[in-house]
Length: 88
Image 1 (cartoon, rainbow, N blue to C red):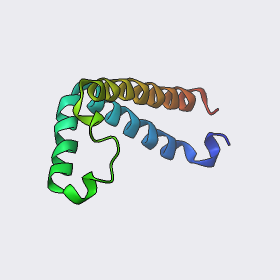
Image 2: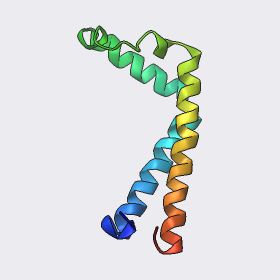
Image 3: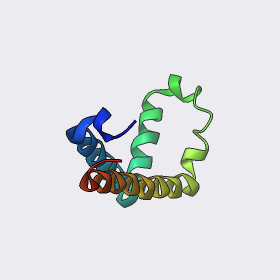
Image 4: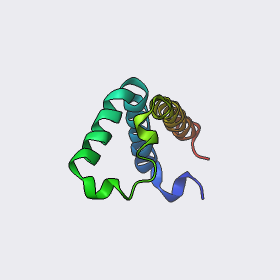
């Protein structure tokens, strides 16, 4: 499935979303952690169904968000490079 399956605008939109989400995860992981934990504080009924909630309170979760941010930015840049080359 090449680039023509989704079209250039779709690929660029996906790349932009990945870069934006990646930048947020890389630059503000503690803020994202507070937001997610606040969500589960408000929705206690859902918290019991999340087996990762304890881990989400640790510094390892913050580092995971940073790694996800780097990978998302890399994926967005790879998509932009594929578009610039003229397709995959």
